[in-house]
Every structure is written in C-alpha cells, then in structure tokens.
Image (tube, rainbow, N blue to C red; front, side, top):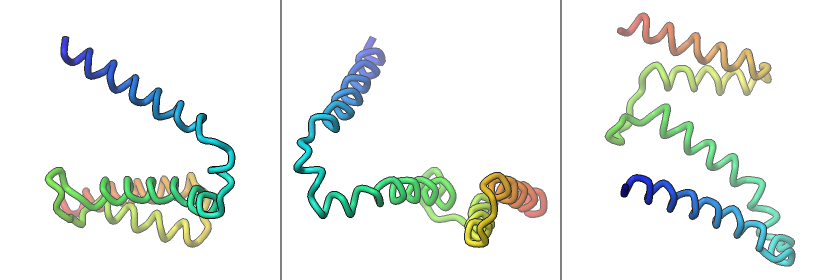
Length: 103
C-alpha cells in the first residue's frame, strides 16, 4: 500500500509543479534575465543527462567505454552538420563495434 501512496504523491507533486508554471505572472516571464536564461535550460538539462548516462558507472565513477565512443562520434557528426538519423546510426554503430572489439 505504501508504494501506491508514493506513486500518488509523485503524481500530485508533478501536477502541482506543472500548474505552478501556468500561475507565474507574465511580468516575471518578461524580465530580461528570465528571457535570456530560459532558452538555455533544456540544453543544459539534456547535456547533463547525456553525460551522466554516457560517462558514469552505476556507482558514479568516471568510465570511458563504448558509450563514450558513441557519444564522441555523435558529437563529431553533429559538428559536421550530419542529419539526425545519420548521427544516431553512426553513434550506435560505433558503440556496437567498440563493444565487439574490446569485449
């Protein structure tokens, strides 16, 4: 029963968090600092997720393995302006080949 209480509490907190975004006054959103920072937040959050998933182990130590190689190739492909599907395929292929040859 406590698991369901935790799930319902998480749902409620998530709903209230989303609702709070709609309740922010317009004058707050029009501030110069908010207007400059808010477009950068999704990039920062996505970057932190990629780094933690690609470069850290389950216990939080840094590791360089096939995932890091795939991310490196993906970054290089993005810098060369490759289409997104090509980036994904190159990253997956690099990670698979790295795992194949390194064991």
